[in-house]
Image (cartoon, rainbow, N blue to C red; front, top):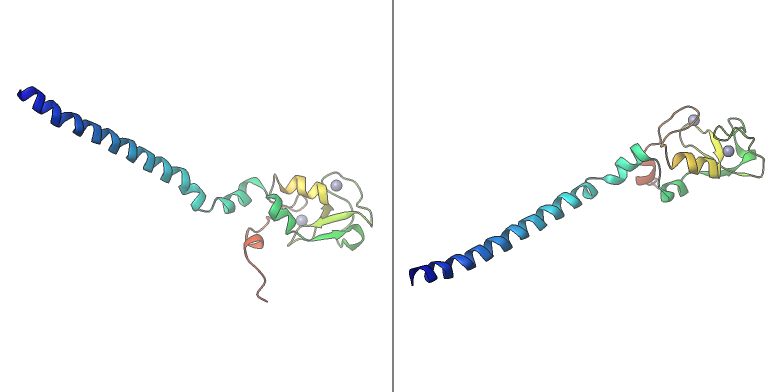
Amino acid sequence: MLDSVLLALFLPCLGMSAVFIVYMCLLWYATTRHQPLRNGVPVKQVADKGLSALELEKLPRITGKELVLGTECAVCLDEIEGEQPARVVPGCNHGFHVHCADTWLSNHPLCPVCRTKLDPQLFTSHSPC
Ligand SMILES: [Zn+2]
Ligand SMILES: [Zn+2]
């Protein structure tokens, strides 16, 4: 008789503890999984992994004839023709073919010529006007 009473008390307790543990695990899993995203992964991505397509789109786009610092693309070592689309690295004004710049900058967030780092602020801040 006493045994069955104890068992009747013990089993619901065990069930509740199990539910509680599972709940805590899920909670812990959710927080550890989402925390890096909340703590500014985009900034880290810019610093370590290069630019996203969206960020590349924000870079100045000109044509070869508008280049001020020479017309040789340092990525493919080819000439950037006057009518070819080119991308300029903000800050140092070095220019590259659009596809060369995008390939390079999506892997390295710096200028392939002078190693000027692309400022993540460029993509987050807007002009004051
Ligand atoms: Zn090129
Ligand atoms: Zn440069």
